[in-house]
Length: 256
Image (tube, rainbow, N blue to C red; front, top):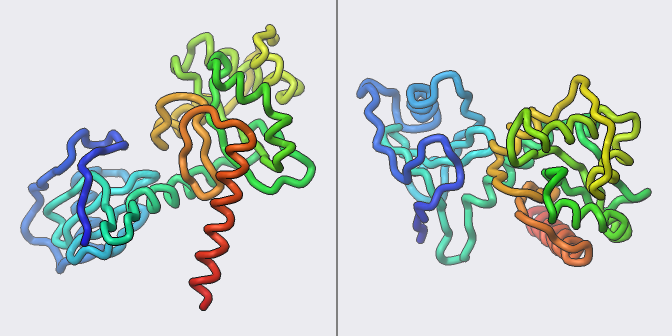
């Protein structure tokens, strides 16, 4: 048995249930019909995937990092969560994590600021704001994360927006000769030489918004799960270890 929770995280439509008025002359129920309907609703925005859900007649639609549900005839769109009541599994969050991971993988390491131990066991992507108190607390413990085998990929998310003092600080860090040292200095409240150059800060900011980042730090695990807020090194390592063990167990079950 399945049910839907009408709470929404994305921002495309601002409603839980949308009844679509589309032309009646659509093809048979299924992915092609759904893509045609989404094309009318969101012209110019590609649909990344359509697949059946365990609920008869309901399809999952992936648009970037967002997950929606649509009836096979393309006439009804549901914006919410799909819960497997019997197993207590949030099917929507599982799909969103995969979609987030796919989106994050479009950011090359060269467009991030990385702090890594010599032999990392895990990688997390952290959206950070130079002026955020808990971001500074996280960075003060960067050696602690490294000690737990955690590689940190920083992306910039100036909460005040583009072309603000926080944004300018992020740009100065990126344009510094030694980005890692400049990041450490800025997070310690030290002055960093003001610089400008080609930079990905605005791109990072827009990416964060598309992924549902609302505050900083926002930590994304290596399976795409988002963990909002500061997490101490030992707790984060335990989460990553448990996640890794779960993935190994699932892989073993699939192979049998």
